[in-house]
Image (cartoon, rainbow over all chains, first blue to last red; front, side, top):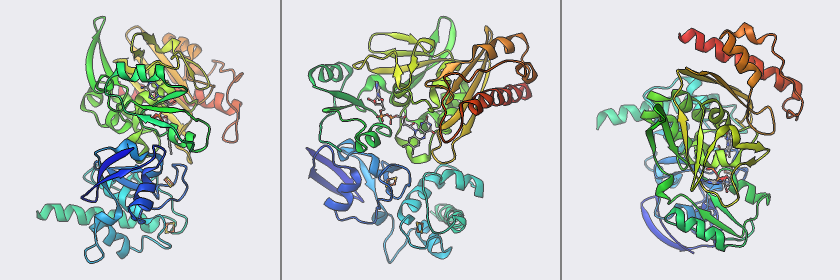
Length: 159
Length: 271
Ligand SMILES: Cc1cc2nc3c(=O)[nH]c(=O)nc-3n(C[C@H](O)[C@H](O)[C@H](O)COP(=O)(O)OP(=O)(O)OC[C@H]3O[C@@H](n4cnc5c(N)ncnc54)[C@H](O)[C@@H]3O)c2cc1C
Ligand code: FES
Ligand code: FES
């Protein structure tokens, strides 16, 4: 089946079998391996990307379900030279160790902070509950999301 | 995942005729339950009929049902859409409370009200809301009261080819939902919704039994006197309740009462 979609601003039309997962299209067809598969059972959030602006788990979505959608992955969020404020915050706050969960954490964090004006640590923990991390113990992830939220707010105030 | 054919019909009639023609089809909405089940090979449909393009299943609106205010929620409404909808927040905030207690943000961005209700997972939150809020389930050609909808584990009054189109909720005087959440899955170990109507109070319970049900003994007691203490002497028998590694049936029966009392307490404080 043909699927047309936009990924990180580029248009693609791909011929995929109906049982192809969106995460497989990203990783295997488009070579965008920043999106990870941790559990493959919709629990861990490592595969989180944005579809039409909202965070979703790409291991539980078929490619054929996102016909004409706008997809954003970690590769499209920032670049090595110019990290997105949330990426920068994870780096500055040491919000990662092995880094396996990080792309999903960041994509979910960006969606989360777009939903409200302010967040306390509790609200961040609750908001990030679809993302699991085996390394950090979460403290620095909460710190990173707090700092990333502040940086994004400051940035949107500028423009 | 086994291979299957995928269809994306544009209206209800097309969806129904695709269903009639296919060998072993299933409807697909958000896919948050069905796709993981297909990966585990617990479901292996020959054809997936994606309902997401159906206009008939969209939207959230105010309705008048026999002179009473109601809210009609289209089956395709995603949990986060319900939780953030202005009409729901102003007229039926308890439904937003229930929807925002489901799973995690990513799941709420995809999962739909219709999918959750049609699936009737024993630990799903919305079934308690449908029972507590005098809901009516609309299919392509039937209107089914919530009281007659939930039959058993993953079994409802829907026939295999029925499409759940929308759900009508009656706006109560006051209502709240109390959930004892499984910290790993997010699902309800037990969830209790208590609603007060001019005609009396309703208690919808999920998580405890094979499917959601009304706790009529609790309702009777609360109709007598709407205070938590009145529930002390009411028996909640645990016969037929779920028992698993998360909670015994006895513990679930205990939770039903504790959560109902918390709900009543909260509603009385709002007075
Ligand atoms: C990690 C995780 C955590 C979750 N936590 C919770 C939780 O805390 N509480 C909770 O209640 N749920 C929870 N869920 C389930 C979630 O709410 C699902 O969204 C919901 O159960 C199914 O909705 P769906 O739109 O994804 O349906 P789908 O997966 O698309 O379909 C589910 C079933 O319903 C049928 N169906 C779908 N739409 C219709 C329709 N309109 N008419 C007739 N049949 C239809 C399908 O054929 C299928 O059998 C969780 C899911 C995940 C993955
Ligand atoms: S890989 Fe998708 S949620 Fe874990
Ligand atoms: S940094 Fe290793 S899993 Fe989170």
